[in-house]
Length: 515
Image (spheres, rainbow, N blue to C red):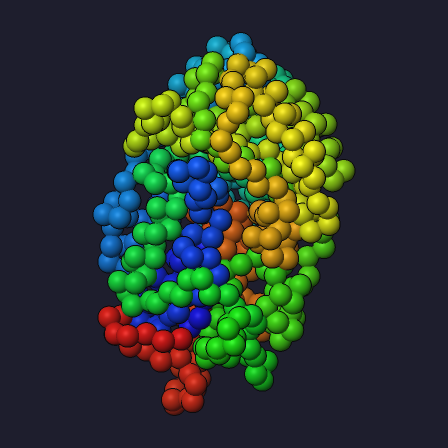
């Protein structure tokens, strides 16, 4: 069994399959595990450069339990009391809390009793949507057509399906709950969690608000520490990992995946291959012509958002940061209009993860703290070069938005900037799209790449495949990949019980492993 990529999806699949007794080799081009969940140096410190929000902890508890381990024995976590701090100006601020009653009171204080009632109604609707889709779609295998989904949930729940509101946009439906434009904008931001615009994605994605309301967890060392823990439990089950090793191409024979060829020319035989990379890399032929037909090519217009990401180590003043913070643009429609036109927003919404706030460490004695600052941008990193002048314009636009909300960074701050060009290099075939296929239109969820591909024995996992973007969703994709591989192996043994040359071998989880 070969797994290309040691992102959260690949690491999850590796640990689960090794725990079932399969020989598993994970091949990763980067020197460390985690994929997008990485840290990068800024001066003499490391700053998280990937996902920062950790939800649906039970997904990881399940993975560790299946390997005979406990998550708490590997990473230190605690629930966040404040989900996020939001600001529109120096005087307009709102905290959302793990306690919904505190959130409701805060919303009432900001926008009045009608807004508090709208919050209750929106929260109830988001919960209904999530409960309908959680086990029937999110944690289950991909469904290709809506009738299949109806069959899965049962005809008796037909009218519940329409209540998920797939044919209305998130922006429209949120307007039914909130007359206050600030609250509509706040909850519309959840569309960006899967790299989409709230003006074009279905209202079904309101379920993300419910996911976050169920609990946000803080991790000592960030998501990168979680990736290291997944590698550790995989190793304990017998999986092997080859870092700093790129895969040149996937090998097929007789319409079936038979292994991989490394950039060094070495060939590794494997009768099952999981690709933990954006499926766009497959469709673009970046993993070889043999594998190109495994998935359909993704047109640039179907890409999700990219981002301008500043990794900083600096002093701050004014605004009192929480771990997660959002500073909103005054014109959300213009912001997404700029992105649709292929340019970074002129006056953007800014997200900051203040990694040393509410965490397990503290700012250094010199008062500097680590910040990851994100502004949404178009995924055109393979078609447009961002010049030094444009980078500086984006930096100044970001700083102005923070200043208007009362936050000041040092003038000469230590930082590095990742643009869509950098994301395009890091995520081949994507143009810098961080979240895979964009979730626009009612059919978007059915069009996202599933676990199986058109080539037998070749599977996909990761945040760009079903069930979607985000840390827990990537882990769920790894679970689905592991489950599908085991089901296919069981089917093979049922109909071909005799030993086959080159077939998948089983062994004790503690023995030496090969591909």
